[in-house]
Image (cartoon, rainbow, N blue to C red):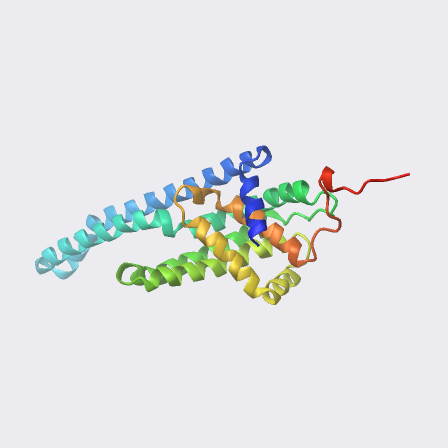
Length: 250
């Protein structure tokens, strides 16, 4: 597993991966910007028209409670934007991974397993749906963990473990579904649930590093392709370095 992680890291900045890295990072940033704008608009409405509606409905006595609530919401949403840059990244990168998973996997297979039969790309709609499903689950985990993140360290542990499970599940199944039907890929993941979970911890740790986490789809998918190959029995025929190749004598 350590070897797989190092191979994935080493390949991130190679020439074939640069274009994928730029595209996935750009899409992740765009999604974060859209989320930020949506939260900002919600804040404006809550402290403006929403507050006026509450005052009109409940009367003048509600003015100061509404003002105080508005300031509390402003603080909470502002803090949420800050936390979102870190804690929403698993959801964002999971969504992004659905669009670029096969491109990443093809590069890894071509570089490290050139003599193996190549995987078959998932239909884009299926890959995007898998990414969206995990992104929504990751968002639910974030919302559930948020109160604990604010008031207790337990929330951070809960968030990390849940993220490890979700990301490990997503990336492994997308790697496996290039070679198996969906149900077989899921069964293989369940059969190796402990290994996949620990591998997910590598990805969860990676996604927790600011800025670097923009490369999570590339690292996560490359890492899981290597892990899948090992769990599936390894490459059909290992390529040896020139110095390791047996000499042919006559």
